[in-house]
Length: 116
Image (cartoon, rainbow, N blue to C red; front, side, top):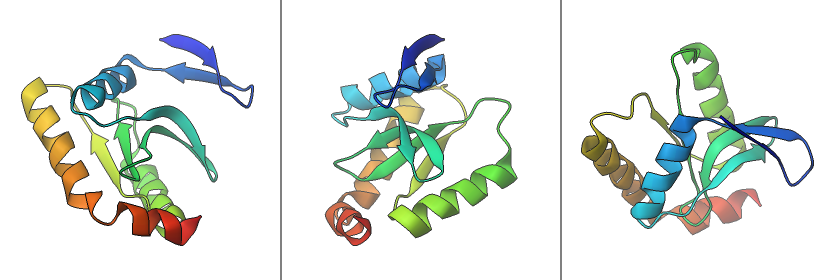
């Protein structure tokens, strides 16, 4: 785990899973910011251009809390969330990432404008 300080000067940790997904998204042409504060949460990966969230769920994630968080992000910021539960098989995960981004691409600007 790499420790850094967020631009607002609070500690931030990046997990191997987050950075792996971040790198895959870059390979697919999707730029993401890592550990982005959004309302009362800090999201793993924000694709600003596509206005979508990617969350890497390790084994300790709580599905009930994740659902509440996903609903909060959609209701308050029009941010759909894609949850990645595993990094394998790599090519299948990458196909799913690009498919999710494509599904939301056309409405990105409209969703972003409605909450800013």
